[in-house]
Length: 474
Image (cartoon, rainbow, N blue to C red; front, side, top):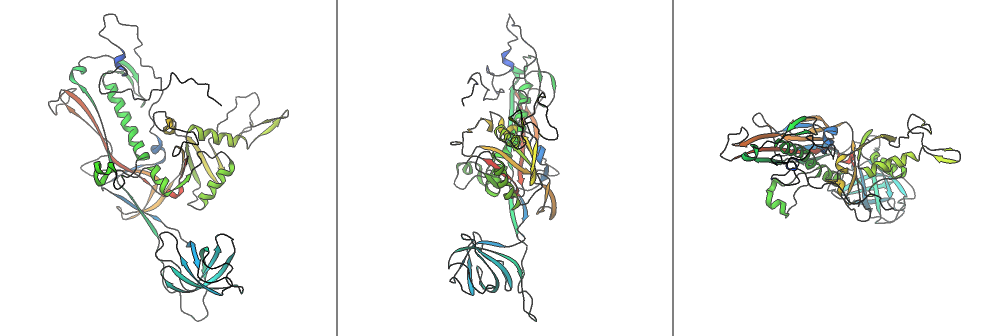
């Protein structure tokens, strides 16, 4: 159905702050030197409301210092062992068989003699129970089947194998060999983020006052510093969006040639795309879709509480899905008004929104302004057929997890998402700002201007990415 909204007027796609005087700047719309001053409102009208989009990392994470160019941490591996690409060299009905493990990345199997295993054919589902009798090489093992009918599947078919115990004869020696704890080592490195606002000394001498209200709650009369303040707000937004969108510069890329070996960092979307769970259908619209997500979470960390940060489309899809699950009939007409703890009367204003639901786990829904803002991801394509890569939401586990911090040299509790910034006793690069030039009180150079500089050096650590779910198209 076509939208009834006209194409114009529309939202402004460019920031209002400029380094030169343009007609799009807020302040230059008022010419205070004109002989015939127009009637003007001295108070600036906030037509876009709160324009900042930063808040996501403040809600789900924390910030902590680091004194290194690289952050490294270890995450637990699986406790139990399973291989999914195993092939038997024996024919069907054989009493013994030797299997070769071909799982990606496996160079040494953690299977030992006298361990008992279950073996299932990946296609037909038929299975055997067996005891390991030998481990001839790093990726092969030999079994003897418990069933008198022997192997239940044909030679060279892909099977899944997992260990469920062990069994020994009376009077024999113990288990040969031992297993080391399996850890996955991950790392990330900080990037340097900068911005600057400049105004020349001559323009500072022409004062025009406009009453403003800013996104951080400050109110009053400002002149040229209005643009400086917006530069600061924009920089603070970039501190967050850079941690969300950043990617490492690939070998042979143009960015690597410009930035050197320090090019790029692993942002949240990049990490979840590569190590987390991805819903490729845009938005899950049915309860069965969420059942498949719950089933995947069961196989991962099974975190009890999760927050789903969504764009408007995914938010409405969740509301619509939940609304259809709690309906009733009134006068022969299907209704869906008895939401939550209260049965809404037909004469009441109906609240069609939901803040969360429980389906195996608790899911709390929160609108993510970054995904709705038309100057950021909210302005990207959302047509299912052509919107490949457009992100509609992110599921983030709540709480913290325990990791081995190699800098601290011990296990530590960390939020699943947190920012590490460069800092030492002599230098704190979390959020630096300083003024240079010869105007506005600065006396650091002969430049007839005031320059306000901003700098931060930081990266984001995404712990336990296997517990995150990214919702996107394609």
